[in-house]
Image (cartoon, rainbow, N blue to C red; front, side, top):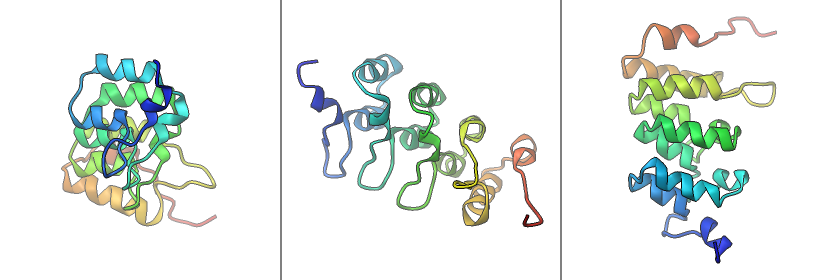
Length: 149
């Protein structure tokens, strides 16, 4: 690529990168793979004006194949919050993308510094899951800490 900075350029008034524009335009995996070939893993974490990464965008669309590609390149993506306080998993559940939600549930990390399934974020996720009709397998996977340690 003759213009390596072009791959991370902000193309729209909402500060969207070429990858975000491609995802939102419904470009196929072949085109997305070509873009990824030119990108460093940390470039996948670039956000738009609203704090959304390309993983947020594919979560909204339910594109699990693209989500897997992105997470393989950068495992931090599932844990990036947007300005509305949503992770990609919240957006997938909100849009009733059950398989995407389950996939993101499996790759979203929880540790002492990051608790995406606790407090308001956890309650929001449960709300979206129930409102979308996700019962059984998804809800059983959520761990509740009833007693503070």
